[in-house]
Image (cartoon, rainbow, N blue to C red; front, side, top):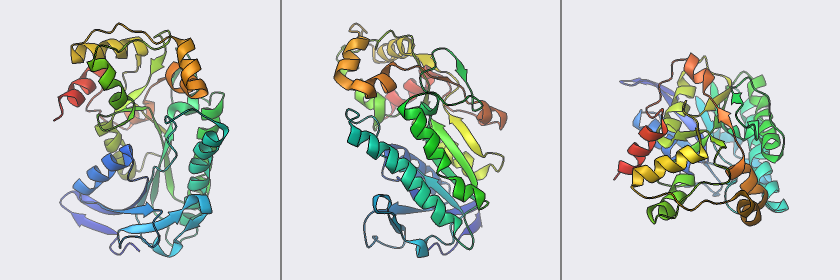
Length: 314
């Protein structure tokens, strides 16, 4: 159970935060930032019994959660979900992707709604996969969903948090773009071949990639917890969406390597199937309209600034 909930300190109001998915790429970055800010982070884990007072048991696949330990948190950061980019999308993989997001969110949301004092805010991960393949169309939070597997999953994922919202929790759905980090994700997988001069444009190269640097991801989550004007869908992407060709050239230039070997679309489809079509060849030109309205300032608003920062890290 969260004992001390809200504490005033040098950094302002300090929160007791419950987090799912804390061991993932985004979870590690968000938890590090929140703890540096003085917040206390407890983690939802599948280990039973949990390792100590900073852990709360749950098992979404079994529909289990330790409700007695949920009372007293000020905020929830919900990140848990099956990795969409690991392996081909078999029928079983697609089931895991959907159920890990939808059923896990529904379980947590219903448990929070049943508390005597629910948390004030729940910041839930979602994804720009909500918009589907939209070519050059400029997409804001007011844009409707696309068609296909990912848009359907994202819509159901966000809807699963309705019990918490109906209980008075301020629910924020952070539609994450492609997260750039050297610790994992697409950039970490691209670096080895690009350093060898084996990088190249994927497909036509005209598809838009809406991205965000990992440091800014963590800051967006922190901002969502603190800013009471944020609720509903929020596009967590940098303002400078780029085409695949622009990203490829910028990465090659940053590494001082040629960009010579294209990866044709038919090869992507043959090797990766539906996953490759959705993640590598589709186009989503997303803008962070609502973050702009509340005055959020990106530290890395352009692809050049983000790659310069990430590739200079030691």
